[in-house]
Image 1 (cartoon, rainbow, N blue to C red):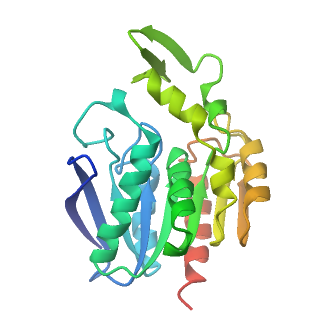
Image 2 (image 1 turned 90 degrees about the horizontal axis):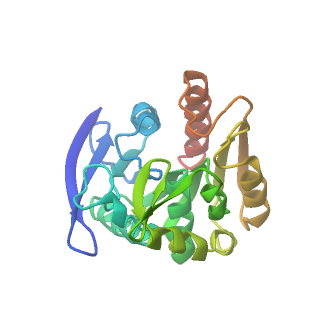
Length: 246
């Protein structure tokens, strides 16, 4: 497997560190990954799935969202809307590299970003693959998860961000965006997820207008990084992607 490091420029002029995984050469089918909140392109889940996706006949592209991972700037300035813009720019970069058929793969908040991006350009994508994806973002602001820091700052799960991020989360309508999705969707969720409740999985199924395939992992938590969890995810994603190579 070939791993190629590069960067592309976001809408504010910052370079976002990116990575391509492919077999021998970049093909025409691709998977574009969006990482979760406070994660990165180097997350355990995606780096452990990369070779399986490549072996399924796809080029995989991952990147760090603005202010995340190795991207420049301060994580305190994080914005989901900026991440949606990052993803759509990533789509254009992927297409310029020769990818004609793109599948969006998002984990947790990366799934939210994928939904929002797809709702703007639904016909751009062959399918969406959503892992542990919330519909109700205010559920992430549960008691104990957010602490006041003063000076217009709060701490979310130990990470200091501006209060504007909280306002942004409250104003995003993920349900309305999901209702615009007509592309096929694979939905994967852990039944023991105590961060993004199983209710989100059930609601998402009812919102989608196109075909979807639900996958529940009985002993799965939010991270889904146990070897048994990853084995299920690999198998279901590979089976899903295989449907589009016929």
